[in-house]
Image (cartoon, rainbow over all chains, first blue to last red; front, side, top):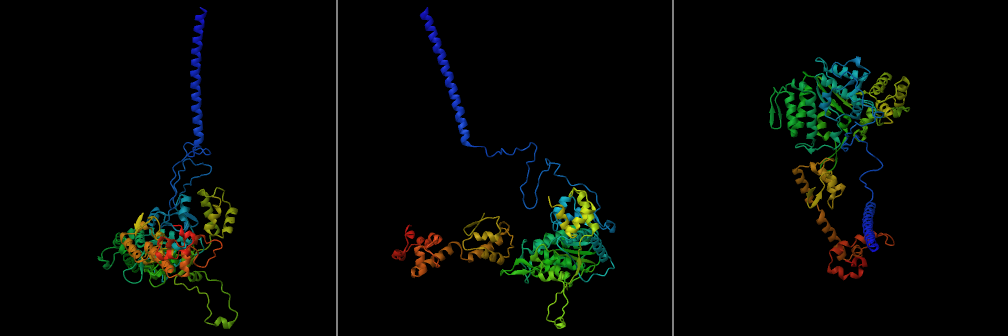
Length: 451
Length: 139
């Protein structure tokens, strides 16, 4: 019995030991697996595809387009409302033919059809970023603007005497020259003028667009630029162009346009035939400047480029003067007093942004240095002594600094469009106006300095 | 990539920059070629038409570039060596040619000079092997 009990207990002990052994072995294997896994992970290192320092909030915007050119698309859906304030919607009158002196010192909106006619993103200077900031294409209607608009209306009258000289708007950087020209072109486009408006002539001379030697003569042609200009003319003044017949048959290349055809047919032919765009443009200027049915506005921004040395070169790698470009040659006679517009106006605006395209003698003529009278009468009467000359072939219209009321209106508009959050007081306006010397661009820079 | 006269040119580069990828054309020559063919300064290779590319090929084939130029330079160095000039000997020894100091520096000359001679070894160069430096002997 005892032996049987012993046998049973021995077998029980053996079984229990076996079980314990199996369990311990399994546990050991499991531990070793965990350890090896842990070691392997440690060797692998941290997952560097996931940042541990920054955890993205759920619902945060992840759609960000890569910056290409000047446009950046950012989804502002998850933006902090304390920092990002959307631009306010303000009602304002549109700038058109009915705009008069009651709108002085008020902001007016540029018509969207005019901006489409110029082309998307093709705005002079900093106006593109300004309009995006304001949320609307709005500009201040100044006394100078009213003066220019009145002059435009006077020159557009049927019985008006055509001005013998073109007018050029000149002033310091940021004074508002390009803005004034654009407002003038917008009013002209709304008043059924034929508007030939170039928002910038830098692309004509800075070697950014294709060019080629002309078939005859020593000029160079830029078909793409001419075609763009014709397209802009067609979009801005379609109805006005349709009212003017050619008057005589016009031969362009191998095609002959009948006398009954209108200027619109001519321009559309030029748009569809880039190689003849220059011929079409020259014929357009010839017919439009001599007719008296519809007023014409020729407005060129950065007009100083017409007299500069371009970045283009001839076949011998010599820099070309602007007069060797056929496109510039088409407009130069109007600004040199050799050609006039019978009914309408020729206006330009200078630009000092690119000094290489501002000829030195033109710069000195537009801004002659202060001349101290020569005390010695012999020297004063000597014809060989060079004296600074301000004799230019066009009329100069100077853009003055902003008046106090204009500065007040500007700052009030910035406050309405949430560009400035602080209340606009007389003291603030006076401070900004004095510091910026009445320059609109400087005022804008000073109020947005911490953006 | 545009393959022109044996060289792969990147399409998205400005023409005057892409032309410098040719051996024998630097920024100045590239600019002159662009002026001759009336390519504006911001013109990219991908914007050129077939006619313009043919004109460009024509102009480039008139010039001595790539292998033709390498052969010409090598032949010039060989000639200097063969007629026994000082310059030729310096090329053979792999030392500076234009009178630079050799007490220190001269690393570039030791690395590059004589390379063209080593590439085109002739009987005359082995005859003058006593003038060759140990560097140039290791071929």
